[in-house]
Image (cartoon, rainbow, N blue to C red; front, side, top):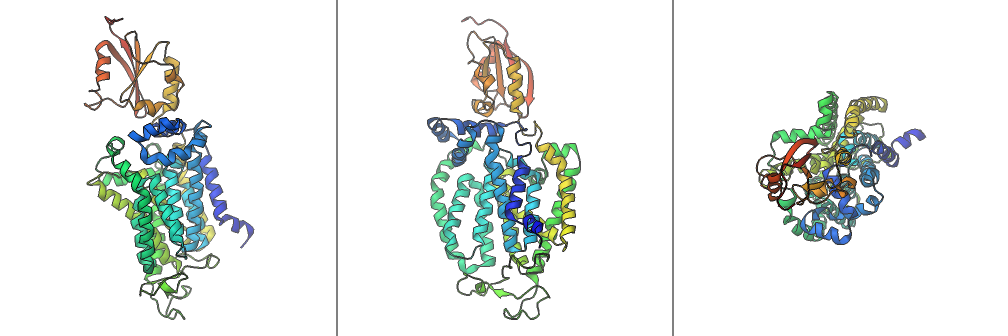
Length: 510
């Protein structure tokens, strides 16, 4: 193998490539509401932060603490840098997992696929915890696939860390349970022990979060099948990218074909007949011998459950998945990881809504592994690279869309610029609901010049969501404002609205 080929398949090289790519135009999109909360929380005094976490967002406490040294520098790049680093870390882990469960070629292609997914760039350029959740999920999966039983201590700590970053990411645990049952049933007891330890570490967070759910996630609704479809839309760049061109649809179609092809190769390996572990007689050429689970290093007493051995990462680099023992292992890792968290989230949400596309972002590495196997199935690296190039070209418009100034759900930067240009001395501001103060304050200069509405106010800027129905119309502060002020034109900056109210008559208290 040439030096260039070795570098191209190196987890470190592909991680660096993913990092550079996600840094491209990272500061162009405006912060939006969720990011505003992150930055404001990360720059508060510890006393103010504690008061915030006591009322809402305790589930993000660890992330806010991690963000503090970055947010102190100010600006979009610094606040989003932890997420960009997390994408690089996840890419490194995906390549390593691909090498372990299949071949170096599968690892390389899986890392490349992950790096060019528009949804990965979208959350790699966001000051929220979702990219870090994916990186921890990849790390936990890598540790789970190790050989020494002592690894379960580190694995349990990683699962606890996963939960502290996002409780709903614990839906990865059932997927890992399936992998353990399929791969190494004799290790169920140490795995369960590690889960008990992780659970103990997560009890305080779970208790606090259960009391804040209605305040934090009131907006989640019972999802339908159409909401599952939106996951594919987000995967390929989001609604704005889809509205502009048909390329995201073609990108998603090719990605799914590759994932299905990789799944077929992996399942085909697992379905092949197995005979003597010592001779491999009767096995198809090139598959190598099949062995019981306890023939693997570090395995416990034999249980009668057979799996294929892990491949030598330095062997069979040019072989497609499914022609070696790693194909079955790839299926036992990637398929539960991809399917179970989404299916469980959707099922639970029929009773207790928890489903949102970004909450299951951590399954995307599994999709990348299967698509990487699909690319490696071409048998020749140049062919796989050609197909990957087509995939990358089809993703180009989506990457431009997610990096546009107004790509996020809110364009708070433009909102602040408009407010700064049009405000007058003595103008007041009213936030309905009150938490919108925190939602928009990341670009705080114009808001710092505004005062609280009072008897002498003649102009009041209303910052709010779309006011419809009775949700916000019954706010007593808004009702009081409308008694003496007349609303003007409302301008939308994503989901945030800005309306100028001017006094229609002089207050008797003026």
